[in-house]
Image 1 (cartoon, rainbow, N blue to C red):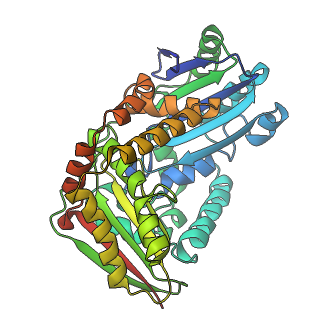
Image 2 (cartoon, rainbow, N blue to C red):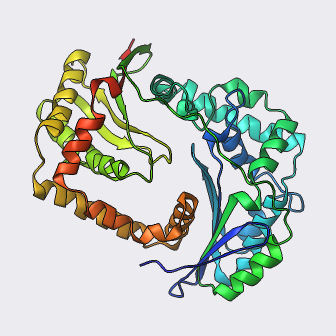
Length: 411
């Protein structure tokens, strides 16, 4: 059971405090309710660009890292299609340094052309290195375009195309910042060797005066149900043929999400999973094979992805995967197989809860989803899943008309 206290500042900043006096450290985690899905389709990549800009100096502090390191702290950040998260860990006695740094960059970044130029260059290089020039780098660019026709999950966090970041203007950047990176759209979680009173005092002192900003009302286009299967062939200079298949699955708070999570474990959760045993070990069709989903807040994609062994025909590989998936739809899995997956899920959740960094991140995430206390009921949702649920949901999502297939051929 993860305990926490919650309060809200007058400017709308939600603050959660999780006391843990078994550690000398403290974590300060700020989650902003903005991700790549909130971008203008003609100006994508901004949420990720901000992850970089947020380290490029703020209004009163030219260098974020240096004072934090002097105080014994370390920090990082990540951006997804759904959210942006900044976090630092610091000896608890120096926690005010983290409050000072985080509040200053929430107040306002140093919007200099130089900072934008430097970070734009970094992001453009990352785009080229990981998505344009790397073997298989465009797989998810291709797949998202195939699977989504309306929803902004159509593009990756890095952006839809390089030119969007290359052409980002300082005014566009400022506008995006003051629309999304405001107290009213943020969640501050402080965890570790702290007290609620101490955090209240520091939050009020450092964040209380920051202008609230306008609440961001999300109104994204809904993805219509897919009615026919989609297949795309790509030929590229890669060493091996690859096969990527996806199916639309339920959103993060729906029961189907938890069932889909279990299905990915049954099919692709490590060396004892069905796909690995049958198609990697036994038939030797694939050199590696994964089944996963993205944990996305809106309706996401359940994915099977693998590289074929040289000489294996693509149609044989497709048929073999379809046959394994068919088994889930036609026959109930055995209780012990499901129990094994539940045990694994329980140990993963328990392991994640061991570090205060992870606990702080989870509290922010569940608060973003609507209520941080869901963190304590998550495991039960997995425990309640039955073998019938697995079969019924498999029958629902593994329909041919709900599938997207990317046949990625080596030139």
